[in-house]
View 1 (cartoon, one colour):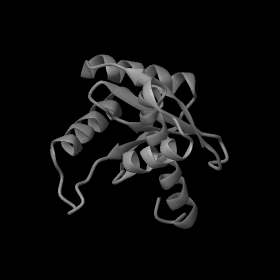
View 2 (cartoon, rainbow, N blue to C red):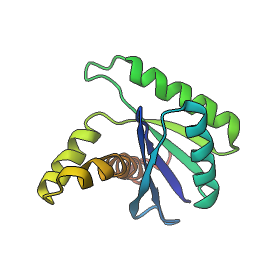
View 3 (cartoon, rainbow, N blue to C red):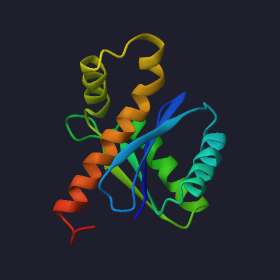
View 4 (cartoon, rainbow, N blue to C red):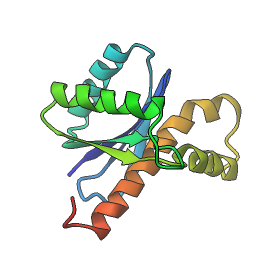
Length: 142
């Protein structure tokens, strides 16, 4: 099944999708949009364009397990997206995904404007890879 991951941001939102075999997660781009409703609409278009059957939204849980303002925004986004689509929408703990994305971009020597333009989609790819690994190792729980 094709699954899309979303790394929700205030101005930039990263997207990644996997192939139908759920083996390979790939970044597909960044949506630059600050308006909540417009972003939802653009995500719905991307879901249709990529023929996605499930969406995984990065859920920024605090390191102590609590939920801050960002997590609540992601929860609201997930609820609104569920209303606009007929596919499953899952929140997935994304702790440290942006940090891991930064480490990856450091290792590949990606700097400046290029880094800013890809960090969100790299984070979305990391979120999706984490979710796919979990699905593979826990087939009965999903």
